[in-house]
Image (cartoon, rainbow, N blue to C red; front, side):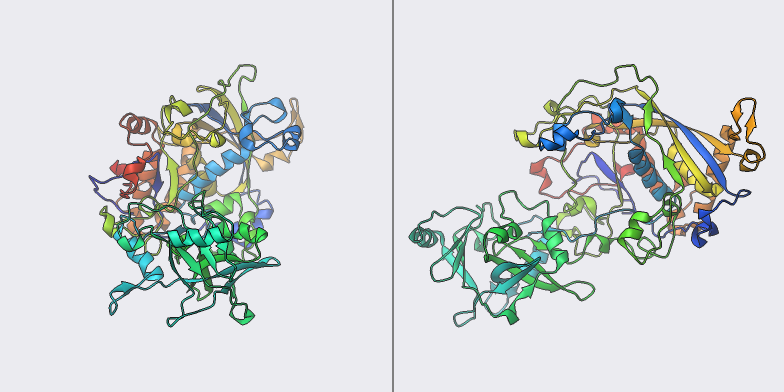
Length: 601
């Protein structure tokens, strides 16, 4: 999203986004492209390590694994409050440090948008405050017929069946003059028919009648803007059409998307699971074609069910580079892309050339752990909130863009820094007394010192500069790591020191009076800054004019100005004091207020 001046109707959140880059800058190191990086070019490449001091500015928490006994006792991860402590030694795992730094390298080097879950999200917008979303839902589910001046239901009805490892939908028979598969039935009449088969009508349930038809009961509905949708009826689905030529195979991608729909209500039945207990589960569905002209199916338990957006999350990432398989950016060149290589056989795997050790306590004998407490409820991200996760050109609710619109995702998500003083559940109890989702944690105290080492091999000067750029943040900025970021946990300050290896000298002599000749030398800050400058120059030269603007350094570009704001410790604390980094109140949330860019908050 470009600059905006939204001065009203704005959302608040403990996070914000670094906007996407318009192009990707390649790592032009030929040793990566040709594969020579697997061998050492002793005279031009850089090898050594970075010694890092890490100080916790707020409490931090990274959960430890379950013991063998706890696994056998079928305990869940939330039952373990211990900090990550292999062999009883408190540490910050190298994998966590690696992931944190890789993301920053990806952003600073104008890389491809990193690991994300490309899937279709679901929505139901017949009563939403956003006009665009209501119209989008209506266009797929009940288009308006001008002649009859009524909405004509577009969805179909049938029965879901599991056959082996696949799922199919057998359409319901069509009856009557209008070849209907389903129709309304008043609640009173539905209750009588359900009573005749010896059962009681309950919300979110379905009932097989003796004649082969099914009654489907929705959940309670209220506060409807559309009188036609008021809760005055249940649904009758005709009996199954067993003609195998008419059955519809549900694509695996739609099975996966359905399983990953976290926004589906807890009381709404899971049709896939019901297929294990019932051979024929009544359902409603719509068929559609995706952007590659593949047959797709959305399905639900009632007529006005949640449908899939026809565009996936990945469709909102520009294809000009951000998803280009052929380009090798700095993040992949330095950290490797073996994960992508395993996922996509068309991508040649690249081995990483940086190795992160665990961060160990400087004073392991000190008691650095806080007492066990329950943090505020840690909820998962809600990308379905398009007013927050998609770029918006307007803050007017009827003009908002959703996931079927032509817009981009907001970019990389970061949490604001906070004081870390009010992370406990007692400060964030919003009336949710569900004890099942509460957990216990024992964070590490603020002002605790760790140290860790990053070893690097065969890097070019600009590649090493990218790594150092992500470690050595501007004055007043800090990194975030671990759990509980929305409530102020995880702020850490890192101070790097650069060591390089003279590999030519290392192999001229094996021993001296002190033992092995390692030929590793600590470099002065001037050398560190020079290496960072080489990286910055490479990126500034490669970026588009629109991304560069008038910037003479990376931190002056529009993108990294947003990143810098998110990393500023005092800025985050200021927003915390002004209640501008809290989750939007649920009563206000339904109005879909827009989240401004970081520098406009």
